[in-house]
Image (cartoon, rainbow, N blue to C red):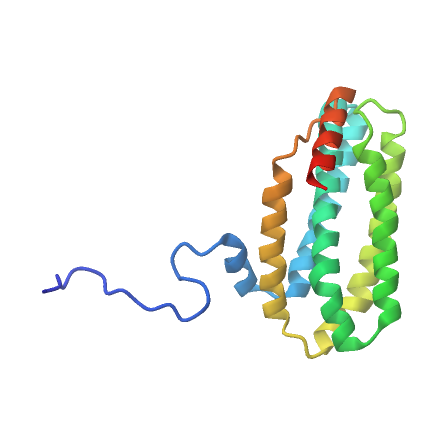
Length: 202
């Protein structure tokens, strides 16, 4: 059998992922490390909080409520990948049990606020104040991670590039699973629908 010289010659894959059709998360993981990925998550949520404040100031109840739920979803995904993948690696490399335990406790406090927000309608008078409390808690948590935990992770011996790929793959899976949930919360019926979906998933 002869091969047309103009046809491209198939090239073998040099890694675990094929060069063509590679998932976006794997491509991202090859371009940065775990600390960079998590820091990018922090920056994204900070921007979402700023946008929420803008919508609050102009009184856009519907979009504001949608954005509050998006913030909650972003934080749920972020805390899950940290607790499942990043924190165990940090604990193993640094041996700093207290630092990891404190971070998990801060996650737990944020999750309580997230649960409150997810149960609120868009016109709930306590929505803005609860989002503000969540923002303050997250900003404190982010500051501690970026000033204490992340530098220690960089100084340790963990393979941050490999960790990044694990984080990105898990994040992509969670985004797919959670992205199908309705984001609008302008009515209590929509809130009830989200609650029913959450119970079915658990």
